[in-house]
Image 1: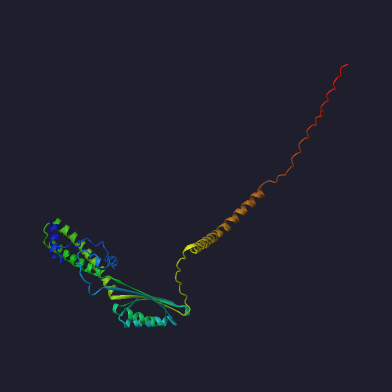
Image 2: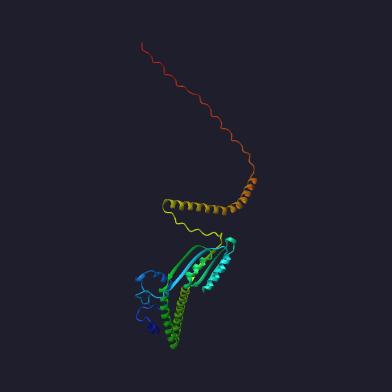
Length: 310
């Protein structure tokens, strides 16, 4: 009865009463994944559960900007310092940084976070630090995910407040234990939703740019070639597989060879000792077989001449 009263109180307090609202425990759906799923579906997209569909486009879109930039510079350390100063002036900060010193082959990988409004301007300024080698950027619309999270957080807060009021009015020990367990569960779900919302707000407010600074002689990875179709593609793939198999076989043989040499030495010594301990035996030639007796050859006798009469 207490849980039923709590549910009815939640429905009355929710701003979307009378419409299907998400339950208190409905936190299995990730709002980030939901935003990507409904991205680009157009007017036929289904509104998230508990959110009213609008006839026109939603104003104030929530967009996440990400970019990648590779720049070849003369001095990597000096360019990295100028990059830090540039980002700080734009109101951002350095998220991560890794430098590898090596003279003309030095390189540095820097992840910067800048305000979303300054994303394109900062990207252009970073490209002017040296010679631009490659650039890439993408934009993700997470408006539906933000609206869904806001609605679920509001409903969850109302649910927590309702259980909290019932907890203060409980008189029996069984009611206190049950309501305390329910309150802890709903507060944990609310905290999880709020953490997701904070992460999403941070990604929307601050865009991420991954900058690679390379020296004049630093080698860059070559782009992957697309496989050739038809007979030539199959021949090239077969040759690559054959070469890879030979390399693996040679590597295995090189790995096993020291063990074979180490085992061959004691085995050779053991064979030599056995040969020395074996008694020497004089080999005698076998006696020739006795000659067979010769039998007399019988010649066939001629028939007597016929007898002629008187």
